[in-house]
Image (cartoon, rainbow over all chains, first blue to last red):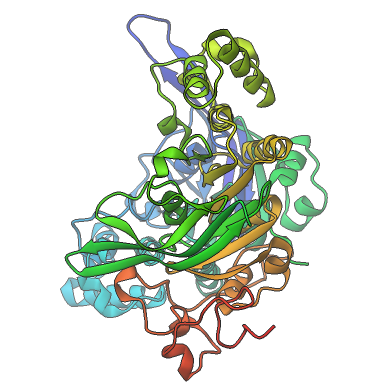
Length: 259
Length: 311
């Protein structure tokens, strides 16, 4: 069995109104996929295709209408026990929105340590926070600062340090570099790759940028209107896309060719 | 004489911490019908250049030096005369440039009547023509902005920009908010419509892929300075400035695979409050010499680099 198993997950949203009939939107229909340990699975699709909905269900912050997800053999649900939850973390698109501006970096990074009771005492927490910051290319002194004192790329490093603090096995990255400039994007993507090889992390990587997918993914799934219409190993998908929609997506993407 | 000439353009902001120079002696020219890309990271001065051309720099910012000439005539003193009529602008978010309370048709006709001699039925007819040029049915003139999708709205904004039959369109990140397939449609449309009318375009973007696919020439900005300019082909295949080289090497390409490590430019672009002496890029540059830390390099042979300007 694979490390991450998504089995026939469907999700419908219901819009209730006092004055009209309840309307349903099928956000995901029977999506199944599996991710091997230590690999990156890239989920590609346009806005509204259900990428982020699937991500929320996989990490257990939202529930599926039907179907199930398991990670490392544990069933994922919105009510899963703490000790399973710490294996799963998420990095969001905007490091401006995902870090509380009134918290210092040390508190942002230490919150998961405290929540999961990972480190013993204040000293242990401070030591671990310093380690984490250094691991993502920041300095120990940065722990005293507030998020606004950092650039976008550095803030995303803080988000990554926070995600790493519970020693997760699996990280969902939802458009982690869309808000960053190109040269900074390269730094963050390289960091994610280094962490993957050092810590054996498994990633579900959500993006609309096919060039980013090309450098990050082992396996690629294409979502369209809530359905997984194509799934292939990365090289195979770029060399020979099967579905018409994938072909159109590849043709439309302005990927730089320097050759 | 070029269509548009920008010469030593500087923009400064006065703040409590002193004077910040957002644009530092930028010079470039634009020829009729040309697609010029402006690329750079956030804060490099891309949008500032577009806003300066249209006289849209608000207090406490001001144009502190240099000149902008359209057909050889300075437009710095009275930008209102050319704004909208000779030069139009397309912004990133189409919703912010469309009035939600007026129909698309009313907005088009208003622009046409304001900037061209057409009135009444003639203006309405022209609005219908513009709609068909952007591939939208003329029946939809009576629709409101909220009834269109994001890509359709940006098409309508292109029609609005074209309504005054301008010589130049400045498009500031026009497709950043759109999906890739819609982005391709919108930029293809912009290119086709402008080619048909001989309209020149300044396309401001941070996306090297967009530059590579849709521009003829590209200027690279760094910390408010134009550091390299040239044909898109040359800049992408054989960039000369170390920053441009780094920018292109750090962009993921189709040749990459999961085993590729992307090139990283060390450090970050300096904030305007702390631009280093000499070349603004020198602390991040691997080939910097003493003079790079002392003397600001001028744009010579289209490159502002002491070591790379020799042709």
